[in-house]
Length: 422
Ligand SMILES: [Ca+2]
Image 1 (tube, rainbow, N blue to C red):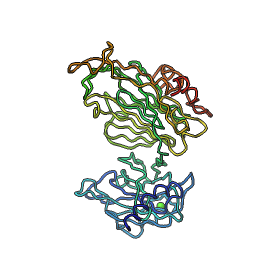
Image 2 (cartoon, protein in one colour):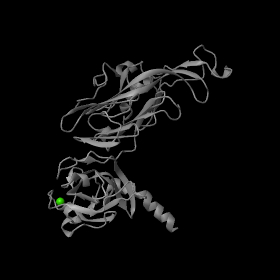
Image 3 (tube, rainbow, N blue to C red):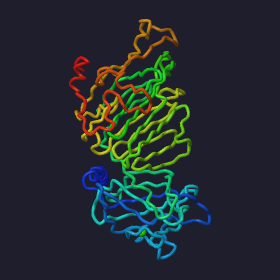
Image 4 (cartoon, protein in one colour):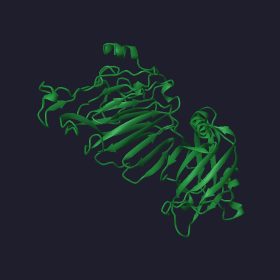
C-alpha cells in the first residue's frame, strides 16, 4: 500500500513541475575541462536560474559526491549565488568529478530555491582557471527526493576566458507532440499522421519552416533489398540535413549534417556548443539543434530495420507553446502541428504488388521490384514539389514561414477534401 502511494507521488512529479515547479534543483557535474592529478578542483563563480525570463532566488546550495568539501572557507557555496562574478567570489570544490575513475565520480550541487519555480533557463559562470570549469553535467528537479533530469550537456565548449557566462542555456520542455521522418521515408506527424514521401533524387525539401528556423533535407534514390520479405525496392533515403537559423541576436546560421561524412563543423568529437541562443549537441553521429522554440535532431544510421543502409532520420519537437504561436509552423512535418489533435493520413506505398503488376506474394524466393512513389498526397497542403527548394539553405518555398510575423495553421479541411475525405 505504501509502495502504491509512493508511485502515485512519483507519477505526479512531471505534472507538478509543469504547473508550479519545484524548490529542489540539482546539477550533477560529470567532468571538468582538463582533469590532471595536480588539479583536482572544480569551480564556478556563479550560477543563475531563470523562470519565464526572470531570475529566481536561490536560498541555499549544498555539495556532495566528489566535491563535498571546499579547499578553504573563502570559496564556499554561498559564493555561487551572491550576484558577484569575480575571482574573489567563486566556489571551489574538492575534488573534481572524474569520468575515468572506477567507478566514475560525480559532483552534486543541490540548489534550494526560495520559492517553487519552473526553471526553464540557466547560466553558469566560469571562474579564474578554465581547466577547472565543468563541461559535462545534467540538471534535474526533485520532488519528494525523486529526481527528473531536464537537461543533459556533454563536453560543453566552455568559455575560454575567466569570469564569463557560459551563455543562457534553455531547458527543453516539450508538450509531448513531435513529428519525424525516417527510413525509406515514412512521415509520422504530430498527431500520429502517417504518410510516405519520396523526394526527387538529390532534391531538397523543407520539413520544418518557422519564423526563425528552416529545416530541409536532401533525398537520394537507392535500390535495396528488404530484410524480411527479400523484395527489391527502388526507394529513397535522406542523406543530408540543412538548418537555416536566425538566432536571437540576429545572426544567420547555416548548419548541415551529411550521412556520408557525419561530422559537425569539421569534427566528429562529442561536444555541446552554444551560438547565441541556439545549442548544438553532437554525439554518435547525431546532431541535435535546439532553438528556444524547437528541438530538432538528425541521426545518421545503418541500423534496424534497414541494416547496412546509410540514411538519416529526423525528428522535430516544439517547446512549450511554440507550435501554437502567431506563426504556425509549416513544411512537410511542421504543418502537422495544426492544433486539431487528430491525424491527417496521406498516401503510403504498397508493397503488395510488383512494378510489373504481379502480386508480391506470387514470387518464388528472392526478388521482384517495387518502385516507391508516394509523395504524402492527402497529408500535406498543395503538392510535394511546392516544398522543394532551389538550394539546400534556401528558405523560400510555397508555404515558407521564415521571417514571417503571422501565419495561420494549414487549412486541414481542404487537405482532407483533396484526399477524398480521409
Ligand atoms: Ca559569485
